[in-house]
Image: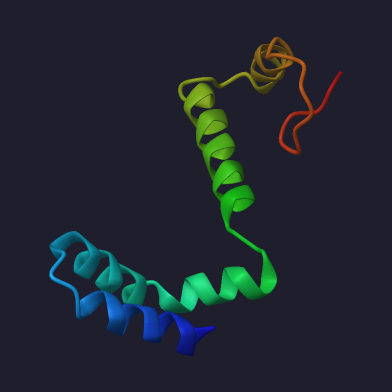
Length: 88
């Protein structure tokens, strides 16, 4: 796949289209990630979503000294399946 991607980039650079050349340069920059995704079909989206959820919990917890009150506030969140929020 890397060879095919490189061949396409070479053809794109031989054109007179500025944006196609910029796109080819971007493809070369991200070549390893593109090829890894094509091979393994894995992204870091779930990890990033988890990081955002943790950040939201930390933001809600600022200034709260009573952990029981914090748990009570967390139970009032929308009822949806998440690995960070347990249903009571």
